[in-house]
Image 1 (cartoon, rainbow, N blue to C red):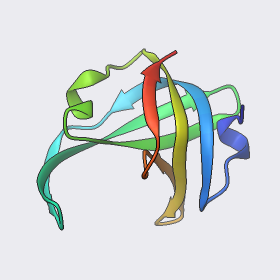
Image 2 (image 1 turned 30 degrees about the horizontal axis):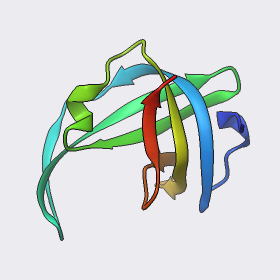
Image 3 (image 1 turned 45 degrees about the vertical axis):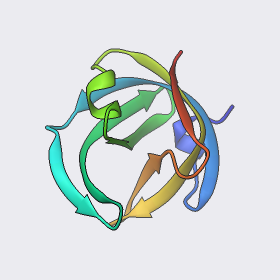
Image 4 (image 1 turned 180 degrees about the vertical axis):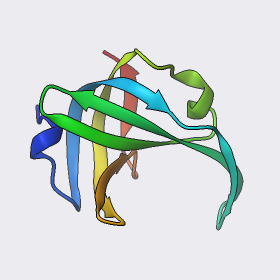
Length: 94
């Protein structure tokens, strides 16, 4: 399993990390319609990354929880790495 510090943009990754912060939930409109989104900061012993939470996931997780992201998608957004669920990713409690 990869550590956050070894993640690269435009690749899939499986990581275990702790949620250290979650932004306020905001309403957005996408091509799929209206949804809610929040940014969670994840940390492990190798680094930090932002996880984008959508819909019900914005209420499902709290600061301090340890989570596992399986098959998440890593991308570069404005010069910083972010991880999201992409097409096949899953979040579970670690």
